Image 1 (cartoon, rainbow, N blue to C red):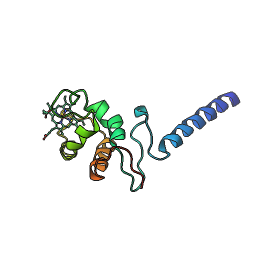
Image 2 (image 1 turned 60 degrees about the vertical axis):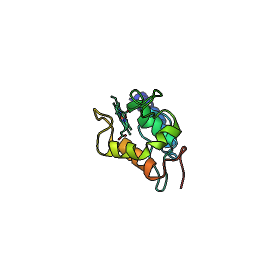
Image 3 (image 1 turned 30 degrees about the horizontal axis):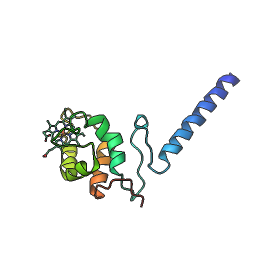
Image 4 (image 1 turned 135 degrees about the vertical axis):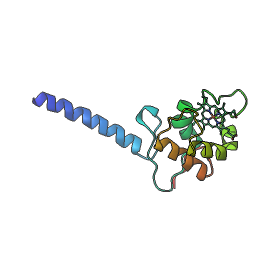
Length: 121
Ligand code: HEC
């Protein structure tokens, strides 16, 4: 029993450590842990949006082969307004699948001027 509790405490401490590290300042870079939390006034950069939204949901159709290319910052920025519109209205990705957090991340990026890197307040 005590051993089990020790085990539990150890693993929850580890889990907690991960959350704190990730929640830290919205600088998470592990997509398995979900979209990073944004602080008030923080604008996510292209790199963050790419990791959490474009790579898992867009780039298989919007890679570096003409048309809408979301693989590089310069190209993605040109489409920022269309990206926001399509994501908000659910037109992209065509089969849906973005979480509310992912949609919010895209909107914050575009509304914040679509910067390349995260902008802290
Ligand atoms: C299954 C393939 C597929 C996926 C996944 C996909 N798209 Fe598209 N998307 C298309 C096609 C096809 C078009 C129309 C042809 C084009 O402009 O490349 C398009 C067009 C667009 C356009 C241009 C619309 C316009 O009015 O100019 C934007 C912006 C866009 N997609 C954004 C995204 C974003 C952001 C994601 C991910 C959240 C995404 N798409 C995921 C296939 C896809």
